[in-house]
Image (cartoon, rainbow, N blue to C red; front, side):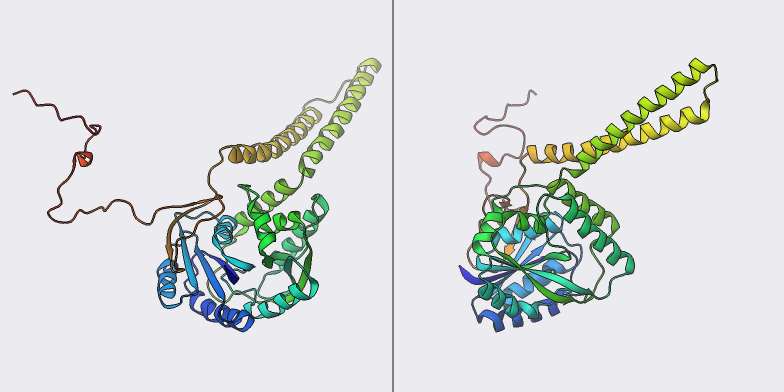
Length: 357
């Protein structure tokens, strides 16, 4: 065990890594001295992120570089890092340096002073973000707070400090569609806010385009609230009552001998009903799809390589740490192949059949 683990998921962050390493190392040393580890998780990057991590791990004994087998997504990459971290307390921070690592010492002091298990960052300012991003983030957090049964802090991201017992409780939750800031809120314990100013991205481009933001919002809503299903039921009830009124109107027109309006009113009703039905089916599909994904019970992540950190690491069972290397692709010169290495479809122990001449 180490005093502190700092977990950082990375995806195409080659521009940020050198400065990230320098600043996080300085913050950790100032906070806890030499008793810390940096856990960098490469989430299937396409640039030189992984080679840079390997170079850093070779020169820094505090750094552990974890390479996932493919791009799993930010939340699962973060889960992999948390699962393999060994610290008594764990800091979660993104690689873009929008969340300043220099406040680590203050966060640890707050944790001790407040006897808290979680210290979560609350953004008072958001530098470098567009009005659209700020407006949608503001609306999302308020909608989530109103819709969910769990009190999830507003204006708080994944930037937070956690105790070991809080982390162990989080790792006991095997959800596939993970919304970690909501899951941390669900586990309870004493959680206190820490206000800070969020900087603009240090380098590179955002890894959360609009499509990923929408998917993330759906994971949050469907993972922590049944309100969308209740909305669908309320809409169905309202339409049922509306249908009764339309039937009474049609019957009254027929009884009085007046002609009932034709295509316009008919098609309007059909289109409205069809749209609401499709909306309700889509909501049900989101929940059923998540049940289907969860029922397969697949590992949340697969690690294909680990650099640095000394001994091999094993997590809590949420994912798989693959063996370092399989059989050599190229055999050394003079190697004699055994019967198990026949290289065809014959099972071991079954001799080759002679070919008729």
